[in-house]
Image 1 (spheres, rainbow, N blue to C red):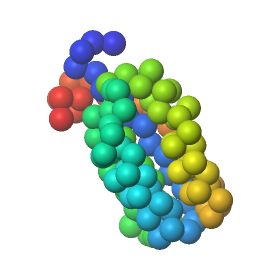
Image 2 (cartoon, rainbow, N blue to C red):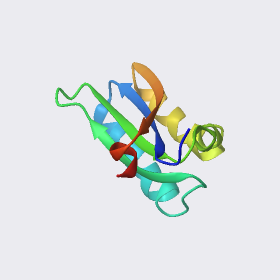
Image 3 (cartoon, rainbow, N blue to C red):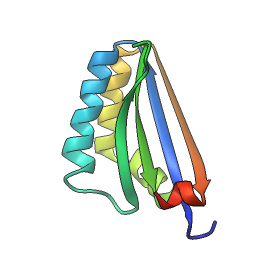
Length: 103
């Protein structure tokens, strides 16, 4: 992929939206914002308008960076906390290029 390509990782949880969003905000503030892992660009906690789901949308320099973070103990612990209270979990990764990747 070219240098103007970034990668997006989206993880969503259905159910217990307030708890999930709170857990994800805590992870974002404690782990990603304070000691950003290699390849991390940015992230935001998202909540559906209907209040049925919440998630973490994160931007990365490479798929390898996504693979590294999703295999790390703090990530797994945070996602396990969310999964324990939700009904469903979905994860997807995408490559984005051009103006969208440039920010």
